[in-house]
Amino acid sequence: MTHTRTLPRTAALLAMAGTLALGAQIEVSVSEIRSDSGNIMVALHSEDYPGPFPDERGAVSKQMAKAAPGTARFVFGDLRPGKFAVAVYHDENGNGELDTGFLGIPKEGYGFTRNAKATFGPPSFSAAEIELASEEERFDAPIKMKYRDGKL
Image (cartoon, rainbow, N blue to C red; front, side, top):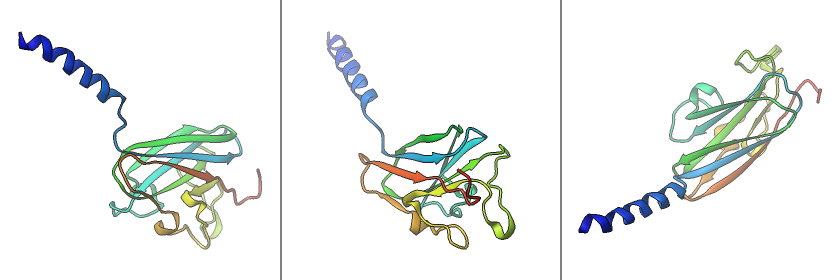
């Protein structure tokens, strides 16, 4: 009987497929988080998506985690090769926004891939850009949280 031979082969193929990672992956490590107040918000932006960087509305994927002092890790998987940038902020008061003061200077922590500098406004997409060359690539993206109020 033919069907008894194909059943074990099908089961073996399905088992192997479950262990394969799909697409490229970016692992974001956000360091120097100063408190457990609020949440850490992470937004992944793609060159292929016309939304504004670093505005969350332009993100192709977003993640959030409860804040804790130290380092937080986020993984974006199943990505196609291309150019990406990540923006993070520490929403300390939990209102879902990066609070700013006079002249738009952030009152809460923030950061970008490549630790791109924010000088008189956020960095450009190209300043924070990282490139995934293949679907098998795993990219580690360390981001150091910056706080403008001088408090750690």
